Length: 113
Image (cartoon, rainbow, N blue to C red):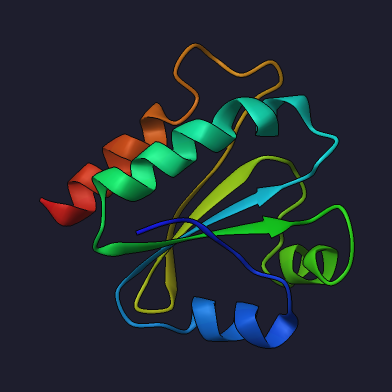
C-alpha cells in the first residue's frame, strides 16, 4: 500500500480509529531528517502491505492540531496504532542514525509475526 497524506481533521480521526495496524509519520517540509526518512518510510509501506501508512505535515494547520492531539512534539515521529490504540512511538534524532527506520521496521515485524 502506498503512503497517504492526511490533509484534514476528519481524515485523521478516521485513520486513527481504524481496525488493524496504522502507522503515522509526523513530518515537516523544513525538516532535513524528515527528507531522509521519507523514501525509507515509503519502502516500509511496500514491505508491510497489511498496514496502513499515513503522513501528517505537522508544520501547518490542520496537521499541527493533529499532532498536538496525540502529544507529538518532534519531527519526524513515527506512531503505530493497533485497532485504534497506540502501541509504539519513536522520535528520529537529528541527524538521523544510519538506519533511521530500523526500529519501526523491527516493531512492525514483531506485530506481523
